[in-house]
Image (cartoon, one colour):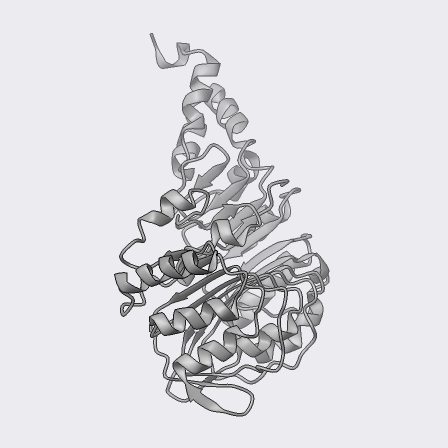
Length: 391
């Protein structure tokens, strides 16, 4: 049998298993019949991204793809998420036109590393012509942003709390914020982010004695439910007089912690951690990863501070041993509590205890669900977007 004698349904089933952009384009160019079938297949695609994924609703690209933007526009008309990078290689003008033609577009990931001025021009053209709900960019300059009220998820890879103070009033409906800070910063005293539910913040101090203010910023997010904080700094500031009763999920990932700064006192690491966690009396899920010194005494203090705690994850806290796990088991028996405790010695149990929690490295994850898609992951591998199920 010649290949073109294969029934259309069989060919289409084969094409449904093709997820690489270049493969689909090459098949599209074979003949009129294949062009029709490839177009039919790509109408089902929702996500065009850089990361390798094998799914009928996702097409990915890895190596450099020099692509005619007219071809892209013919193949993809129902995209929800588009990721632009140098490897997707139409001209900037063609990329803008391609994105503008996507009627159902909800999210844009832009990894093109350009001079800031050029980047901001492209950013403004795109964002002012599309009603975006999700945006992931290198820089964020919303001065000419007309549709900022539609943005619910924002990822910025070069930002600061000082810049966020200037920009947050453009984002009244923001529900998830993921930012990386590389510069010395100041306390946040900008607008309250009333609708923010998920915060993922990474801070890299360029030298010692730089203070991290991200914990203080959380006080300006009164309805925050989940936070994933990575602090490569040796000092951090928070106001222990303010309680945050909505926070239920917290990941604190550290590399070098020596001191903390509360409202008025510099204290040691363990005492400061205790003071910090007292701010969040309704925590259910807590992960401490990195250079935290955890002992049985500290664990008992945490359990008294956090009466609703059901998960304590201290993997990568290398001083925690089986003795701590035995202590937790005995504590739960004595006080009638059910607390899942994970350290390096029993981390294999997480998969069986929580099969619904993902550890995949994904650019996008299905479900606006922090516990499912973020809690078990290291900060560097958190997804760009959490895609609502109803999209």
